[in-house]
Amino acid sequence: MRFSACALLALASAAPAFGQSRDSAATAPVLTLQDAISIARRNNPIFLQSRTARARAGAALRTSYGVLLPEVSTSFSNSYREGRPQFFGGQAFGSTSDVISSDASLNVSATYSGSNLLAPKAQRANLDAAESDLTNAEAVLRANVIGQYLNVLAASARAQLNDTLLASAQAQLELSRARAAVGAATTLDVRRAEVQVGQAQVAVLRERNNVETEKLRLFQQLGVEQPTNVQLTTELPVDEPTLNLQDLLSTARRQNPGLAAARSRESAAGVGVRQARSAYLPSLRLSTGISGYTSQETDIEGSIEQQRLSTARGLSSCLGTDSLRVRTGLPSTATTCNRNFTFTEADAALMRRENSKYPFDFTRDPITFSASLSVPIFNGFQREQRVQEAEANRNDARYNVRAQELRVTAEVTSGYKNLITAYQAVQIQRQNSQAAREALALAQERFRVGANTFVDLVQARADFERAESERINAIYEFHRAYATLESAVGRPLR
Image (cartoon, rainbow, N blue to C red):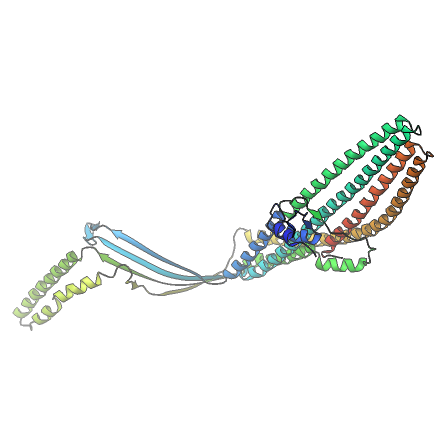
């Protein structure tokens, strides 16, 4: 593959111009068929969209594996409560100080069922199908680019033919005028020659416009802007095909991307049936978690004072009880009362330290572990419906595979026969064109010496134009037949 550096750079970046030659003179950029296919793979927007399906399938496959891993979640929260007691049954509860608190937890859980255990296999089959779809899209893009490239070449060949016919008509006009000047031709012959020149000029204009139109369509397939005066340089030979039909059919059954995608989807549908049937199996759920909390009173001094008063009341009550014991002759417990009901500054400092744990010095709750096994019994025939739908999808996928196999066989067989027929047609049209060319040369010579009329010459030119047009059409129909067969087989054949 040969392609100038300036042309490759501009086509790859979709620039409007291709650069200049070494001597700084503007030159026409060139584009080969292989370069056109490569550029289309990088820039065609429709083809690039097909890649997103593969990306989505890859993400679904990763997710199917991720479902088998434990789910981990954490939370952290803060709250504030106004320092006002709440009353239940006429009793006041709660702190008289404002309270701020925080909670944190870490939870781990995992669920296992037949559906999520089979999901990776199903998603793998879907990914294979997406890969085959992408290969099929690439084959379709290649066929479209080749077809449009051939359309440009065919239009260019017809334009060259019309240029030749115009030059011939102009030469005949000059000859008619010269003969009329010496009385060997009539004014009618001159007027007819002028009409022929005008018609040839119109044909040249239309065919040149057709060339530009086909180029625009080609670069639309490539997905880039058309450069100025781009030239298509690939020349495809018309060689006799040496292909074997049975080998082509065998290769197509292995490599045709559409058939491969259908088989992958059949495999995914089979796994879908197993997933649907797994709804009758039990599901296992495992979970564990750890959590903690902390709180802080904004004014701890009130609580310290309440604790001091409560201790004093406890001491007073204990000492009163001890006085009754002494009067009844029992031993005194005053020492115990003083030891149990004492609130010192050290106790107050401890309460202040305990109150300063907010927000991250948590008091841990007990760790919990749980495992549950659920066995489905009856859910209103929903499982049965999903199983039937999955089986129907699997059957449809099987039918689609069979349909694709028949399509591939038919397309390869017909494409092979069309290719052979197109090659034979090229050989016949070449002979016809050569005969028409010789007839035109003879008619021109006879008209020059006055042995033919201008009408005979016009008829010979029309025969040559028709034969040469048919030869051009036959050549590019041969190349299109080759491209169609390559698309059906699933790989290049030459």
